[in-house]
Image (cartoon, rainbow, N blue to C red; front, side, top):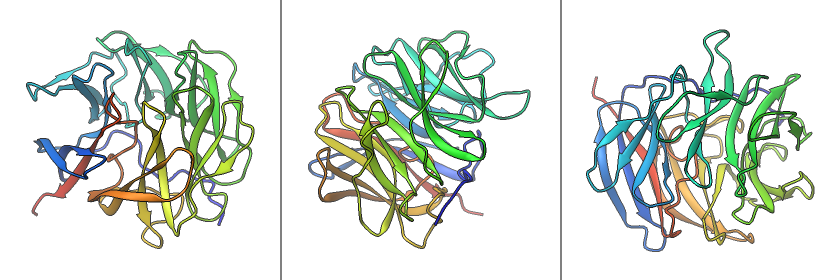
Amino acid sequence: MQVNTLKEPRKAERRNVISILETVDVSSGERNILAEFDFLIEAPNWTCDGNHLVYNSLGRLYKFHLTTRESTAIESGYAIQCNNDHVLSPDNSHVAVSHHTHEDGLSRIYTFPLQGGDPTLITPMAPSYLHGWSPDGSTLAYCAERNGEYDIYTIPVNGGIESQLTHTPGLNDGPEYSPDNRHIWFNSVRTGLMQVWRMKADGSEQTQMTFDESNNWFPHVSPDGEWVAYITYRKGDVDPGDHPANKNVEIRVMSSSGGGYRTIVELFGGQGTLNVNSWSPDSRQLAFVSYRIKPS
């Protein structure tokens, strides 16, 4: 089945949900609720000092302090239609976002200081959906629609000429670098279902890494390079090219060298749960968001 439209609703949106910010111990599967929000939050990044989670809500980015359990808005200038495709720079000095511009509503990639500041446009072409920042700090990786197809591209972190890495029909999405800078992990529908793939950072040697009868999205490599976490939808529950909200999903972990997987969390969520790399710096925990529908 070929899919050449991006169906996920990545614009800032309002859903009638309670958001539960959680962590899970990857070894034991023990879950820990950090906070509940009476509105939509999505996609926590863990800062490299281990002290904060960065999440998005209604177009803005927020920093959640793990000790005080308080949230603080991050100043982002005019970039206030950010979706859940935000990534921290390796040194955590900056954050890159996908912001839907006022002029045409399309997603473009911007960067600004993590402590707050004015955004800098990186990708004039749109739509472009950010997913990865190379460990050496030099390059951003993203999914983009060009000429009716969604493929994976890279671009210098200060802007410039983009490079296309995938050339297969259907959706190729979620590119994220391995900590050693050698590989980019991504997900693709090229075999019919959404599966996890890996390629060298230059786009060569594209290799399928998951083979089960599910739809697997957004692989995230642990800081120690040993493990890959991803989110799974049941076959038949969604179209292969879609990762909607409000579904029963799983968070799975597999070895970065391939092989079998372990399900560490079963939850009600999907869109917003695990869109970005949310590994703790010590590779022992994952942060994620689950949801409850508000009573009518």
